[in-house]
Image (cartoon, rainbow, N blue to C red):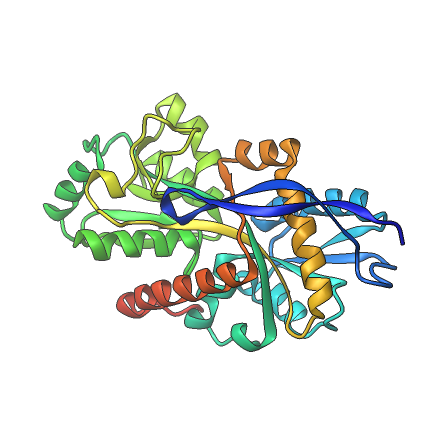
Length: 330
């Protein structure tokens, strides 16, 4: 098999703990006899949603770089549990991989009974990207900032309601973390998906929600919603004038939807290293970075060790939120 040009990797730490991949010239070869057949990229999202977007970008680039098909396998269900379980039980040969969300590996084990052990059955390779949420209110809410909303909510305990895309969803846990830190009582109204939740927020049936950035932007620009803050530790380029929740009343608040590449445990180290290097090279490509950031995301990198540590941190964080709010999935 011919020698492939690959980047040697360096990591530049950014505020908020994110890592952006920097590259220098080097060369490496794929493991002997790999790959010789199509790759399978499992995602726990339906086509067009969540991690499916990231999976399709990665599948295109792997196919072109490796010369073999890289097929996206959509397995929605259980908040990502179905797809994660498929990969946890797959043959550890590098041909089946998971494009995971944080919910699937850092939230689900605390939320519901799952048929896999994240620490024993899965091998994190690297984070891919992360996306913040917008804390948005219906214009009927007089608050113009996070601090004003907290005071407004405190003056009306149990009188305001917030929408989420479902019990245990990132939009649900983001607000429960907010409630915990801010000391406010806002009633949860779960919906079956982000679309119905957004419609009722716009119509005023509910007053507030943490929404995905990109679907929220048109409504903010049209005045149908007001964005009070974003959930990351840094402001986002798609809403540069909107401060973070952390800088406007709740220091340390952070809630992100993140995506990463995960393999079955016991995948040969040579294959892990090769796929890791491929992913880092792909994340350096300008067109890939543009596509990920256009969706309101931030490109992230990191070694398998860094990704494993991040998953453990996220698991501990959200487990505390779930326990404090007594949340259980149906």
